[in-house]
Length: 269
Image (cartoon, rainbow, N blue to C red):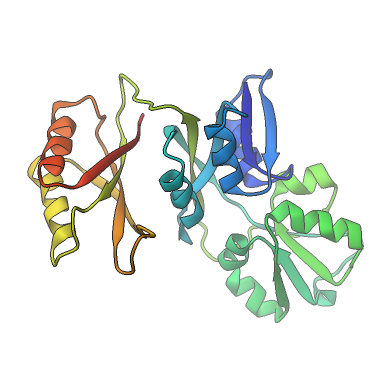
């Protein structure tokens, strides 16, 4: 089986893939962007992909929602939570006082704002934490530190100068596992929906939420994204603590459809 993750080697996505998929025969393939993973899944180049959808500090990963929106044949088959620990990685014989820049992916940079502010250094964004680490190794720049993982430090043989530098101790990322083809687990306990309102009018979101409330369905996550058709038009990603096969969930979907809303099941697992 082929699994896609955001590369290169040493990213949180790769670590999540090892924690979720334990089969030693799995082939893990790094991709440069999240949308590349979605496209590879839809085209059948890989069997499944693992992508981060939400971080407890920085919130939703919007480009992953866009991937679920764009690639209509891709469905969620599961999820996992990964504890996120951010560390400062440097070359050998580097002291904190000599650093002038910090490199990393925008998410880790945002998660370590206080640490960076206290150092009073510049920042530079990369496509991934490991891309920044590889550039550090290539440049051999001893005035630069990289925010990354202990996983990356071990693989790339970088020195961990400071540990757990993120602003908030409870830092977690929720990953979803995606595959081609509609997926509904028989013993599903969660359902992810994408709801596009029939029309924009005051209270449309309240009306949608009232359907779930009336059926006593627990909504645990809600995110809006533009439909990309017209300014001011939005659709809603929702996660409900109920499997799609349940009578209550089936009734909710039917009622929303009767109201004229478009309901797309992104997965039930």
